[in-house]
Image (tube, rainbow, N blue to C red):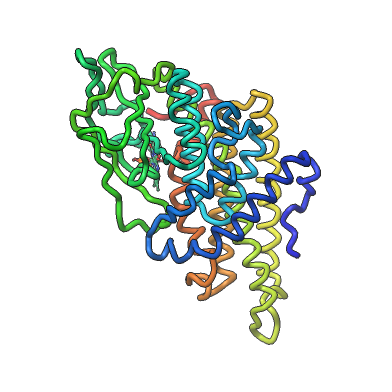
Length: 387
Ligand code: FAD
C-alpha cells in the first residue's frame, strides 16, 4: 500500500466526506481507468460515462437537492474532483464544466423557471452543458469579447463565436457570454437545435484527448427572452463561475499527481538496473520524496481552501493561488514520474504521459499559470500588471 495521505488528512474529513471520496475513487478505478487510455489514444469522448456521472452524483453536487443537485459542501466537491482526475483530467473537466460553469450560473443567476427546466436534467446527465467565454482573439482577456447580443422585437439576436469550449460538440445546452447593446457582458442560455447555432469540433489535440473540445458559432441565432440569465450581468458574473471551477481544479490536479506518484513508486521498486531496483538509487529517492512532499502541501492547501469555501470566505485570489500551485505541482510530478519510468513512461501502458499532456491544458485553461501569478501580484502590491 503506497501512502498518499501522509499527514492523515482524511482524519480531518467528516464520515460523509470520506464515504463520498471512496465512492468516487471506486468509480474512477472501475469505470474510468480501464477504458480511458483507449479513448484518449483514439481522441474519443466516452459519452457512455455521462449518465453514470449523473448516477454517481458528481454533476452539481453543491446545487440544492430541490433542483436535482447533491446539496453537499465544497469540500466534498473538491474530493470528487480529486478522485475523478486521478482517472483523467478530461473526465474531471467534463464534471467541472457541468457543475461549476453550467449548473452553478443557472442556479445563481437564473430565473426559477430556468432552474426548474435545466438543473434536474443536467444533474442526471440527460443533458450535457458547456460554457462559452473564450473567443479566438480573446483568451486571457475575455473582457475584449466580440460576441454580441442585440434586442429585437421578437427577442434577441446573438452573433459571434467562441473557441476552445469543453463539451461543445455534444452539449445540448450552452451558457454563453456576450456583450449587449449597453456594452455590458450578459449570460444567455443557448440550446442545440436553435437556428444558426453550430458546434464544430477541434481536432488534433495532444492534450485532453478523451475530452471533446469545440467552437460555438452563432450566426443570427434568435434567443427568446426566457433564455436570458437575468442575474448574469457584467463580466464579474462570468468570473464568479470561474472561481467555482478553478476551486475544483485545485483539488483535481492532486488526483493526477497521486496517480503519477503511485505509478513511479511501484515502477521504481520493480525496475532493476545495475542489479538494484532503481528505487534504491538516491536520485530516484529524491524525486519520490519531493513528490510526496509537494502532494502533501497541495492537499493541505486544498483542504483549507475547501473549509474557506464552505464558510463562504474563500477569495478569488486564494482560489488563484491554489489552482496555480496545485496544477504546476501536478505537472512537475508528471514530468519527474515520466523520467523514473524511462522509455516505458512515454507509452500508453502507463497513465503518466496522458496525465502530463492533459495537465498542459489544465495549466492553461481557467486562467493561465502566469495570469494567476498576476492576480496574486496585484493583490500583494495593489497594482494590476495586466496591461
Ligand atoms: P492567450 O490569452 O493568448 O495567452 C497566451 C500567453 O500569453 C499565455 O502564456 C498567457 O499567460 C500570456 N499572457 C496573456 N496575457 C498576458 C498578460 N497580461 N501578461 C503576461 N502574460 C500574458 N474556455 C472557455 O470559455 N470554456 C471552456 O470550456 C474552455 N475549455 C478549454 C479546454 C481546453 C482543452 C483548452 C486548451 C482551453 C479551454 N478554454 C475554455 C480556453 C482557455 O480558458 C484559454 O485557452 C485560456 O484562458 C488562455 O487563453 P488563450 O489560449 O487565448 O491564451
